[in-house]
Image 1 (tube, rainbow, N blue to C red):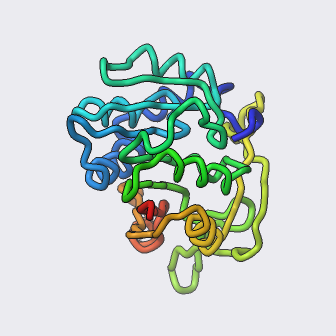
Image 2 (cartoon, one colour):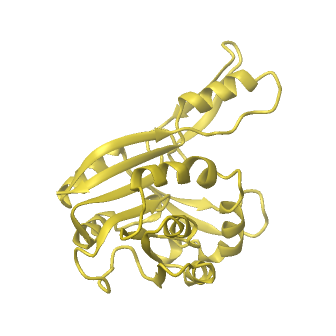
Length: 250
């Protein structure tokens, strides 16, 4: 992750939004992460691109020994403020984790960050180095088949009364500048990289991983009453927001 993809410039806003009890992180991602990682005392987990430590804190609270790394010092400082006694946080780029010894971790978690990382293959190589054999690498990302920056959008068919997802490009990899606060005068941007699912699969295999599980997670939210509520709620149930890859180091 390069500095121009860091979320450090919006650290306070990001901290408030992710800690909202109705956020996707709280309602959708965290319960599934805890199920997949099953953190317990003695487990050593790396939270890669940890942000302000939201998932690190939850894993630590269940007994795991957690190390969090992020490129943004602003976010790492927030993480340290709320750290428990089994948590450590460091400023580091995801593709260079040379400060940590090989085979140190039982599991590695990366939530909603891999799409902001340019040197993805280098990251996968580093994670492979740090994981023990048969260690687990859990990646959560915006669904690459349905959430493609600049090339996907919600559409509504008035005749059929159907909400659907329009996809204009998928196979081609792309790099787009994303406005973190659309509609606001002050602009904070990040870079988002789109990659098709096969790119993730091939890169993980080349780094020594086997994908053991693919899960697709839907939105928990519902529309307010109105003429499109049924169609919008059905679209949320049928078109997932997130994809999770559970990978095992061979």
